[in-house]
Figure 1: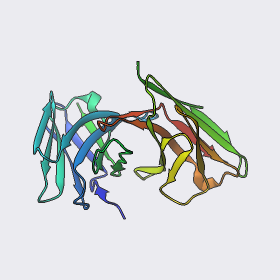
Figure 2 (figure 1 turned 120 degrees about the vertical axis):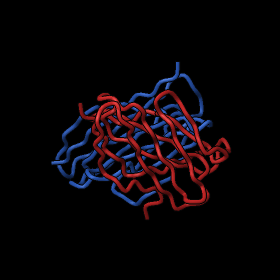
Figure 3 (figure 1 turned 180 degrees about the vertical axis):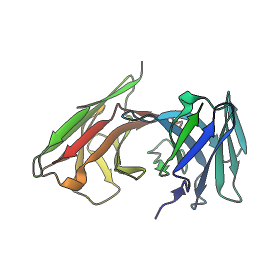
Length: 115
Length: 111
């Protein structure tokens, strides 16, 4: 059962335009969401996160939007750059009590930024 | 400084051979450690997590096992590898603030 879903396996965007990566989740207990970027043969690197008490978090060119009622979040990259070409993973967790915070990952979306 | 390392980076192993991937963390104590696998065409799948020495939780039944012999050491093992064990393995450290640090990753090809 895939609790975190990224329904678009790939996305192609022209340089300078906006990239929008989508993520849906089914578990209403998730209260913290993260986006990771992964280059081939490397481990994922953290991009941006959002708590369920917010609906938007912005960091430079990256903005994450959270719609709790729809159980949907999205990552916006503006403007897109060729170096943004990578696989993007959405991840979710429930609770942060200081014990093991298990992350549930989506299947990833491959973003290709073209010149 | 806080770092996480795993090795080996790549290995090719015959079916039925043993496996040992090692992960170590520096700059912290009592970290929450995780092993993930990314098989071809799939997302990151959580295999094991550990909140302390000797404490291992398994998320999925499989041919693999994990051990936490020391506070900052997490080992992924198998006694007999299967072809389906091929994939990209990641060790991860998740802080109390939900920041996750990944190791460099290990590519395993079982032939």
